[in-house]
Image (cartoon, rainbow, N blue to C red; front, side, top):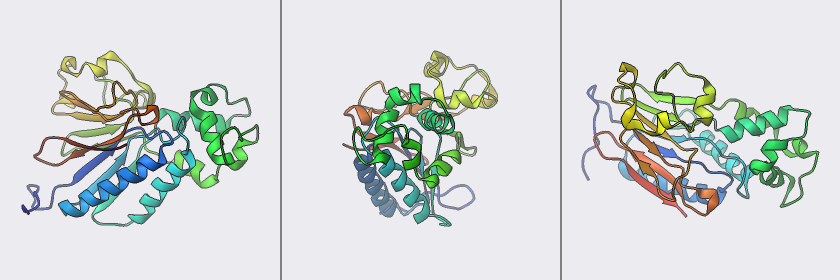
Length: 249
């Protein structure tokens, strides 16, 4: 087995795993987590597991997804070698907005919120106007703590749910990180020649275009439509190597 890659300071290079939109697919997430942990054991490198947001809604088991991610975070809390990072997605923001409002959940309910509420109420069609009472406070508090973006400045990596605004990064609204589908972002060959973007790679989800990931010039899209019948995908970023992908179906 080859010796672990080293940074210039002699420390082992960090191995990244970035997981696309889960949307209530807890079985696929369990399988993908198992594959990632197997790969970490094989590589024997420090690792960061980054969840890119949209854990809730649409799929059958929002509750199980959040339970699983929280358990993984707890498993590696305080670890010197493995870090778990969980980012905010637009669906978590919609769920929090609905939770905090006294009004009808409206848009969130029709965008997969009904399925999320059912997963807390105990089954399909069981959620009612008291749906908030079934959501554990620990889940709500966890969602409130989610980060909007994570950056590795040394390796020029940006992890975010939806994308960035190339004209103003890193000084754009957090709404951009959660919601953007701007062609200015997607057409990464036309990003402006700004020093803030030099050498940058953005890893994101939010916009499935196929059941396969997108590997573009300056961005990697790992939303492969897990809740629409596609796999749940993670990109593996190893210093000095081309991106690789693993998936759970």
